[in-house]
Length: 117
Image 1: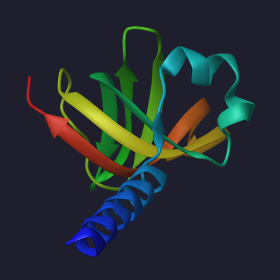
Image 2: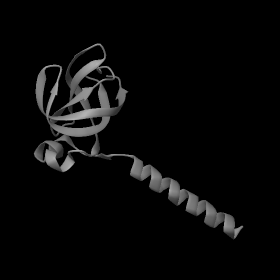
Image 3: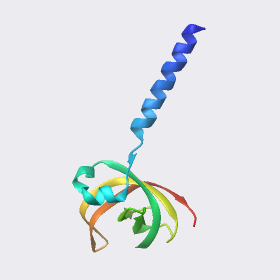
Image 4: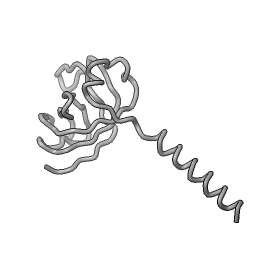
């Protein structure tokens, strides 16, 4: 019995470690905009409301406002509608160009969760 408890505790510890290391850290947009070099090349998570968007054929960009600032997110997964609550993860880039338009600091989306208005 004691051995199975130790095995279960070890398994829980391993699963917890994997889950924590697999998820990007969520940060606020003002921190990213204040020091984009700190986040460049690292996967981050942000959440907020879509304030602006443009795109065609499933590609484009949308702007997220989390209450601390705004940042553009480049996507190839379709554009969420204005007013949608979005959680996005991706990689931070500086001097990003997309569809002939230049942006300063941008998150290149790798995954997204959307809640309706």
